[in-house]
Length: 182
Length: 300
Image 1 (cartoon, rainbow over the protein chains, first blue to last red):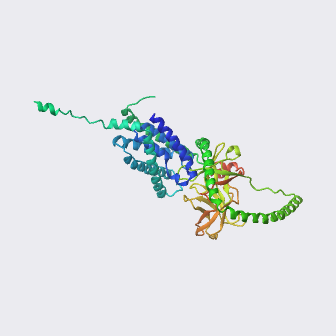
Image 2: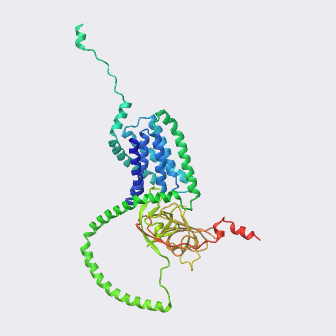
Image 3: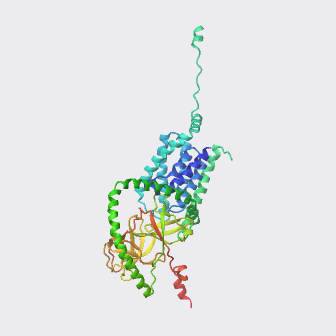
C-alpha cells in the first residue's frame, strides 16, 4: 500500500514539475520528484527509491534542455546515498529529515551540474544562484510535503515506532502489603 | 509480489544502483551522440506531457486573465472615453487608407505583382517551460499535425527566439538562441551592405549572445543591430537578433568579440510564432564529413 502511495505521489510530482514553471517562475527551483525519492529512501524502501529515481529523472530530462539521463543519474545516486544513511541512522523524526532533504538537493544539483560540465554542456543558469535557490525552495516545499505524507501514513509510522522502540519491560513490583505481613 | 528480507534488499541495492547508473550513462552518451537529431524519448514525453500541460495552461491563463480584468476595471471608464474618441478619428483614417489600398491594388495588378509575405507564420502559445531550473527550453501548442517541423525558426515581434528541437503530433519543444551550444550565422547591419559577418553563439549567459569570427579590421559600433545571415542553413536571412552592447576589439589577425543583447524578450514570452521556413536543400558533399570537398577534388 505504501509503495502505491509513493508511486502516486511521484506521478503527481512529475506532473507538477512539468507544469508549474509556466504558472510561476519560482516553482522552477522546487525539485518535486527529488522530495518524493528522498521520502521513499527514508522509508527504507531502497529498491523502490532507486527505480523511481531513475524513472523520474528521465521523465524530467525528456522535457528539459539538458542531457537525457543526467537527472536520472543524479537522482539514483541521491536515492542510494539517502537509503544508506537511513539504514545506519534513525531518521524518522521530521526535524532530522529536513537537513537530509537539503543535503540531497545539494548533492543532486552538484552531480547534475558536474555531469553537464563533464560532457561539455554548460547550463545557462548561474550556478551558485541556482543551487542556493533550489536548496531553499526544495527544502521548504519538502518540509510541507513530508507533513502531508506523514499525515496520510500515520499508521505505518506508529507501527515503525513500535518496532523501533519496543515497550520497556516493567519490573514486577512486589505487593507492599504482603511484604508487611511477613 | 516477491517479498524480500531486509538483508536481501541491502545486498541487492548496490548492484541495482550500478546497473541503473550504467543505464543512465548509456542514455547520456546516446543523447550526446545524437544531439542534432530528433530524440524518440523526448517526442514521446512531449506527447504524454501535452495531456497535462495544455489543461493546466488553459486554467492558469483563465485565472490570470480574470484577475487582470478585475484590476483593469477601475481604469475602464476613462479608457472607454478615450477609445471612443480614437475610434472616431480612426474611422476617418480607415476611409482614407481604403482609398489608398484600392489604388495600390490597381497599380499592383497593372505591374502584375503579387502581394504576399515572405514567410508564412503560425501563431503559437507557450504551454510549458523547462522543468529544470538550469535550462530554458519551452513547449508550444503546435506540433507536426499543424505543419511544424524540426529546426523551424521561432520568432516574436521582438525578433528571433530559437528553433524547434523536437516535434510531437500536438506540441513542439523549442530551444532558445541563448543556449550554450546554439549557433547561427549573423550579420551586423544590412546583409547586402555590411561585411561584418560572423557566428552568433549562446555563451551560457541568459541575457547575452556572443558573436565571433568578425575580422578585427571591420569597425563595429555599440548600438548597431544584428540580423541573421542565413548562412547556417537553418534560419532565413534578415531576422532581427539583437543589439550590439559591447565590442572587444581585435586586430588584423585576431577577430573581435562582440556581445549582443537579444531583442526578443526571451524570458517573458507567452505568444510566439513558428516561421514555416525550410532551408534550401544542402548539396550532398556538405552532408558528409567536413573534408568531403577536398576528397572530391582529389578524385580524377
